Length: 505
Image 1 (spheres, rainbow, N blue to C red):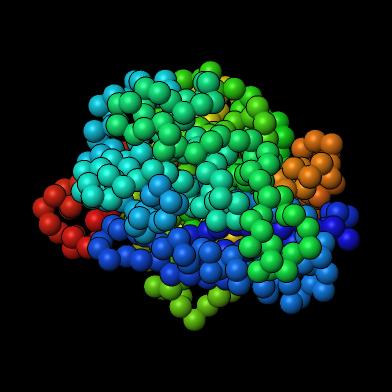
Image 2: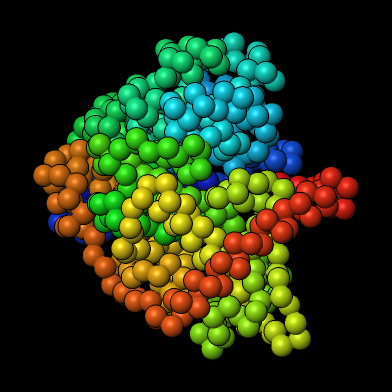
């Protein structure tokens, strides 16, 4: 039986998923690695961690699947977006990778945003600390000796592709998160590169997500005892790969992913709309499609913080057990999940979370439900913004991540979004998306639709309760007023030193 291997290079671990030609998930394997956080706001990783993780995953899969090394045909990738990998002329790593969640580049972002109209015209996105260009500028300013030796700029998953093949490439979905890709032309922007003194030859070759990068190096083929010349395909950004695994293929369906952060994402046929940086807009892994999305910085993170702080002896199922017994709106208690700042729609690093309306009638279950409602309201902010900018009418949501693992929360999502909510039967996330890209690259399927139809099935479906839907529409209107009435207070708290400096956004 022929196999493909999908690799998801995450922030804390690398996951490998083996798919066979019958469309069956044969095995998965995961290997963790640490963050390097030498200063507040810094977040880095040594790319050698990723290589070690990949080697361990391949070796462990080889020991679990008797004919893995004999019948593996292709490898592709999903990866954390935006993180910066710098190599010299020989392909040697010059410094630790600066990760997407590193926030040292506020000054660089402010500088980029002075040219915001041109930035929006070319890249469709605003400058945020997570993106790649501000990281490049920081190195140019603060580590000139390193920058002088740079000859290649890569993103994390592309470093693994380089390690396997010796080729410097990226795909359009990852490239669109650098602030250096012209989304109208789908090529590196000469304007951006010249403006920020980045030689075009430093940038990797652009490929479609299931286009061939090359075959595995002979020495690695021998090292892993592979029998075939393994084909390596470009892969895609993690959210794009996750969206592929939900099966959404048209503009009227959306994906909601609730993990540490939260994402509300929908597909776009073009990028002609005036986003003006209000939403993230990137290339999809499906050729010719894009996606727009909003981000809640602390989605599952808010619930985990609440559990650890107020119910540390309960697991998530125990914590959520009675939320359906609490009325919509948690008896007048509202929560905003801004505990580390917020991304969409406010883009405010200084805003902080709030419980509003506390009285003596509220108990742990009220607080728990208000946290879950607040997270979902925050994602509805993105839903409303997408509807407003794109003028589309979303008719269905596919929910994945931690928020899709609890039936009561799924029903609450249906009630707050006012839409039918479905879950996928087998959720494997971006690693499955990467495997699907490899299968497409090998022509196991005629096209993306056939691949999705063959591999993606749905299980549970949740329909909005009309009464609760109307109640939540009113409560959401109140929720939206909280930001405008607390943001100045949060700024004053920060500016007058009330908050310990270590906790600033």
